[in-house]
Length: 317
Image (cartoon, rainbow, N blue to C red; front, side, top):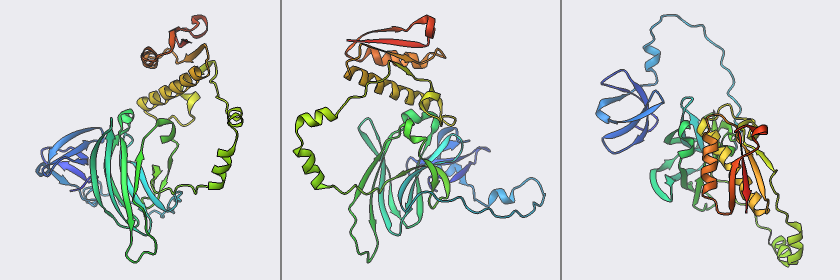
């Protein structure tokens, strides 16, 4: 019994996917890819992949269909973390080894500077391993995933250094990472783990250090934000149809914080954030952050005749 296996509860007709091994006798199962429950191993049975084929309720013989060519694999060789849809809501975090080497790996979650190990194993070339499952509705609560690995092959002519990669999920980049995952040949949100560092040009660094300080200052210019920042989701990203409400809120708050930081650094006296009326959640979260930010003189509803109650004016000290 492994993470990712589809199982049936022996006490009922419910089916689900094993998302976590809690201990030797208890596993966590996502029922209908919606809610998760702890279940004793003896109370579940693994569903064989062929079961649905032989348990069909109809006897209709389907005409053979012509095989479609596989979707093109857009990702190159390498080691990846792929977030693969198990359903519209549930994603499987999967390590993909698209190399010719064995990969010795460990994985873990990091929340609030606290680490919790998930799995460790050896992954063969062109193989994958599911390490955990996450719900899109909880996107803003996802931990950072930490992957440590070492590539190895008997008789290999090169020595690989151990690698530690920490993947932090941010809404503004997560939904842009979708492509076809290698080995799996499925669409996934894909993050490469073994990107090699750029070669350092020592001569260029020496030239930069030799520049006069006043030349550097003259070349640097802080980009102040616009006086009015529109936080409606369609203004922030074109690909928002698949985003959950929590992911959209996270992106809106990140945009708000970035604009506020730049406005304060640029010594702006005021800035307006257009959040819309809606259910008021974004407005409340913005005002909560403003109340904790030093350097804010006051904030209030912006011009009601222009925005109604859909914008907040921030005065900066």
